Each structure stands twice: as structure tokens, then as C-alpha cells.
Length: 231
Image 1 (cartoon, rainbow, N blue to C red):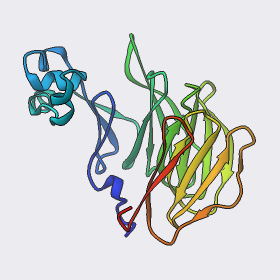
Image 2: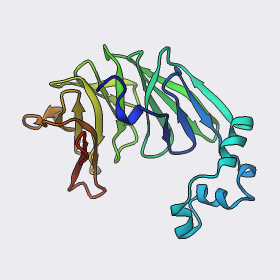
Image 3: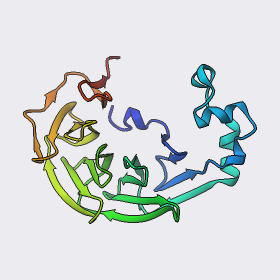
């Protein structure tokens, strides 16, 4: 049941054309070059245009073929499988978590296209998922199987808080207002962490069915989770 988590049964994508492959300790970047999609209808779908037709259609296969031929770059830094990716709210940094227990932060900008900026060490087991503070581009949180959530200061590269949790963590989601972090574990419990005090808000929510994914709505007043019984 937990050998390969449902959200990782296939390769994962993060915005911007990055491809995270479960079998590799590196991150593969498919660069969206302008000439790869200027002449096709499918290309406009990747740029977000095209109205209803664009929303219904799948991405242009030509992009993937040409990207593989011309635009692949590997970001190497981890020593074991990479499990997760997350962008900072300003889009300038990409964080990755790995079986090697580390969190790497890659910087992007006018003069940098995937430079390893920081290696955040401290977890004693697999880093399964990451989330950035949606209101602050320098705050990052990581969920690990070592039964902890760590908050990191992106400016200093140091751990700002180490919050013990009840179980081995596999999911994490930051509320849109930046005040609460939700974390789910392998025992199908969901805990909530106060960002300011670095403490758990009450007892975990326990569920009798498998909890696979968690998410807040954009307003932050609703919290969703998916379960193994089809809900």
C-alpha cells in the first residue's frame, strides 16, 4: 500500500517544464524554447492561450520530442532518488527533497539557470515533500519520514524550527495566508502547525481510510484531502 505513494506512481511535473524522475538522483529540465512551439496550435496551449479548446486539449507532443533533443539539462546534487519539487512564491528558487535526507535549493534568474544555491541538512530520513510559504519567498518547510517537519530560512540556509510530529510524514501544504502548515503521515493522520509558534494546533486528525493528498483552497477557508475509498 505504501511502497510507492499514489502521487509518485508516475513521473511528476512542476511548473516551468521541469521533470522529476523517481528513478534518478537528478532533476531533468526541459527548457521551453520559443522555436519549439511557435508554429503549432498545441504550442499556444503551453503558453496558456487558446480559450476553451486549449483547456480541453493535451500538451503538444512536439514540445516533448524537441525538448528531449535540444533542451534537456540535468540538475545534479542529490546522491539518491529525488522525491519532490517545489517553487518559491517569487519563482526564483526551486527546492528538491530526496531519499538522501537532504533538501537542495536551486536558484534561477537572469544570470542563473539552475545553480545549486544551498544544501539543507538535518533530516535523518527521507524527505518526502516540500512547500514554500506562499507569502514569503525565503521560508521553506519539509516533511520527512523521520517524524518531523523542518522550517528553513532561505536567506541563511539554516533550520529555523524542527517540529516533531506523530508519524512518518509524506504530505505537506501551507495555507494561502502563510499562517498554518498541514502535514499528513503514513498512519493517515493530518496535523496542523502554527507557523509563528512552531507548535501543533491540537491533536492530529485521524482517519480510518488511506489519506493520499492534502490541499487548501485559494481562500484558505477550506481544506481538502483525498482518500483510498474514492473520496
